[in-house]
Length: 364
Ligand SMILES: [Zn+2]
Image (cartoon, rainbow, N blue to C red; front, side):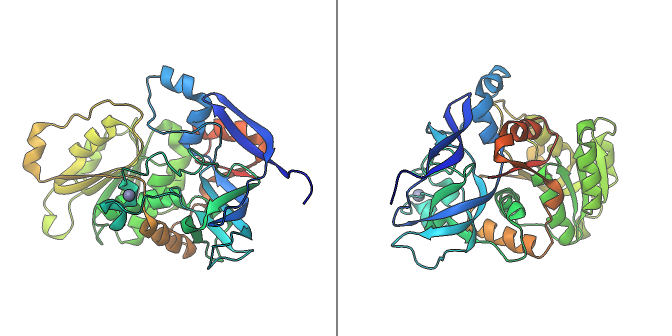
């Protein structure tokens, strides 16, 4: 073989030092496959690597561990172009997405019971686009054990967002999913809130979804995706809205929602959830907190048999369930995507961070 093969990639050398540059193509380890990246979604952790100073200046924190220099990009899809010597079950041409965690210890009690999202020994190791090179690049070498096959009828652009749907799925699964007829409030209308909306509607629930004035387009999309009621919390009092809803079946006399799905990373959103859930109801909190700000829970709430579920990322079960619902058209993400070529990464990061698009997807 001749000289080094070069590709384009978005590399973070340090916080605030992110650029598109030419780098050497990765080498495929014996347990890896090479993928030609077809699409890769921008998420907040990508943007934080770029704007950390402003982020911290705004009083926020991140727990994410980056190992610089690193190629950013975690939410990817691609086509296999090379298969490592020890890999079986995958072929050149297969359409795949990688899981975010690629290097689990596999030995601790969490890993052995399928809860590897909680593995204390793998934190900061093998996290795609954070501690190992990710997919804002033309090619990426990925451990075969973390690959999942994309169903035929799902585009690369849609499939790369499976991770977000899987986060949603994990939150719903933690709370025992939802039951037909339940009255549900979803706080927040980003991709997680909008995915939760579609799953809850497909499950036969009544769904109220909230946003603010800057979410006008997202709330309209929520309506299109089946929301029974959209609420701009700057214009309408959510406590009053909650009084219009009652629990299902046995709980029909109880005002408030059976279940509140919080897809907004702020303590005030959880506090709001506690005020609108019915006694005996459940709450799921999704999302990376921006700070260590405490959540204030009125002590009398302990008399109400309310359960709050915290969630951490997702596991393979959530990915598989999500892909299957996306392939059946039950969860549609197409209208949440804006695509950009790799060269326009700054615009893609900016538009996403400023909320101008629900999800920026880079096409290398
Ligand atoms: Zn483990």
